Image (cartoon, rainbow, N blue to C red; front, side, top):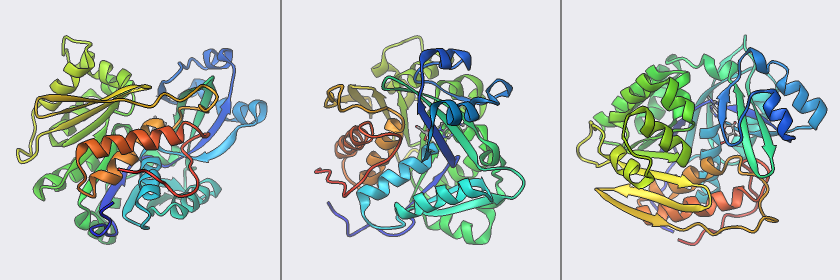
Length: 346
Ligand code: 26A
């Protein structure tokens, strides 16, 4: 790998730092809380006892989570050079934020949280059924992120020196204003601005802010259900994932120096890469059932693996292969976790 050109703070990520409360549950428990396999939702009143039930009844484990923070941790694992990535997000001043920070720091992420002393750190209930996961996020402090954080002079320096920007679709529920500010900064400096569709509900219920950000997006990640929902909401008139990916590339775009790239993961089916009117497909090694633990964090790991190569100027093919490699490691463990040295061979 060409590691020479890596430097600190190249990739700036922004998202919701969440502590995952993860357990294997029965399907009735999912139904009880009106949750669906492989979906991700925001908690409402009906979920107020969910976390405590997860802990007491199902002996849940606590794992560092939050989609973007997961991706940056995975990228750091592959990069093997500390602080190439920086993370912005909001947490409370409690034990949970300390756990999250310690984990992300240990993995090499330059963690720059905004702190809110009135609201607790966000959590995400992760309900595992078989190898599927269903997520219910209680954003709490993560939802209190304000644009002041990126306007703070010290943090502004980080923003200005970053060369790549990665923000989840999830963050649209929190601070679309911050997303646009970063997007415009990326455009003005001709630097790649990268987003993720994150979950079907983003395309459905946050359509307007999502489509406000879209013209700035140079690279977009998503999985099959997210892409289908997006296509449906945008009246693309097709359910064909390749056509959808090409249509996403062709949506209006601000920075004409770069054509948009769209990457769609489809579980164990091939990854679809759309660029410049062309589609490439990349097979995934299908793991045997006994090796699969859970798919929590698989999409985040894919994005992290991809980005670790992208910021080194590797070809998109290498980026996708690294994404696939990283995701295959993470699904063999509980949550978005890894150990030892990453031995991806480009
Ligand atoms: C706004 N929402 C719903 C969310 C999330 C989220 N991260 C940010 N915002 N809902 C779930 N996650 C995280 O996704 C990871 C798995 O892909 C969980 O914390 C989990 O670690």
